[in-house]
Image (cartoon, rainbow, N blue to C red; front, side, top):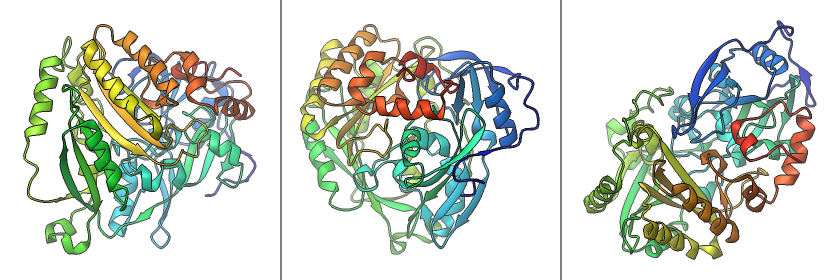
Length: 466
């Protein structure tokens, strides 16, 4: 990484006198529940980025590809970083890639995968930006083996609200590094980062699918998969009392397992596609009947005689092929409630799902994964245990009250809600769920003493209040 000074350095500005925010636009979260008119700019140089930060008349929000479900990347003055997307260097000998923060994970793979390297951690979509992956400290289906995204960040260049550049790493300005990983873009603007990639023999995986007759059986299958390097996830049928599910375990495929066609296939071209599907009118097509039908169809699909060989993008990035998903929930959108609880609190998973059944609030999708070590960010979401992501139509009557009850259940179990997916958590729950909050707030205040960085999420949750 090549920040001009390990401490801080001012980026020369072309014009620091006039307000740099001149355009307005309506933006929303990926769940389409929050639609807001904002001042929006998309800088294509660090000079322009500095102008925006130093001349803004209000709090500045950093936005990547817009894949946060709620209000994490929305604010009155929003900077869209996708105009700063240059991949600056890649060393195929070491697997270190150095890129602007606005490049998508998909774009990074377009460079690295043909040379035998891939990101160690991939969330459900590769169409998020590098900066967004760090700011949310995203996780994948292999958390037990590779941790979360921040574990693989070697260095970052952080532009502070003052316009200064600060180089941070696990060893240099480590406190600032830990505040920025999982810091929701509130410590400054991540301008670029160096990432250590993982050497891969092929970009393909062997995917094993097994049926689990109960939630506990699915958890056992996921736990068994930990013995070998793998990606493991379970879909849970939340419409049934037994909470049956399908468990998918993916392991690396060797060259000998591939056909010639597979050997010559490259990853899809980079790009960001998120709003090409119009929202279905009214309440959309996701309702109790369609949810039950979809769960029954998924369960009854044949598993096949053995493992399938698929490109890793198909196995690990299902949302890349599901641009329709938020649109299907209608004009009020979808709310995803993702939480994690410690391993010892796993009975809470069944308690929550059974409670939702009793309330008639069946999630359209329920996805279960196992977590390993805590993230290295002060506000990182993962902790050792289990995480369950639940997608609900936002129009469900009584949903707000039910999720409020779940907040208490999760907090009492020692768990937390994922801020990158949230748009409704009460502010008083955050200190209970994130024990490092006060430490994060102190470090953040030193980086941004005038509280220039902010978002609708930070305002709603009082994250900046010491």
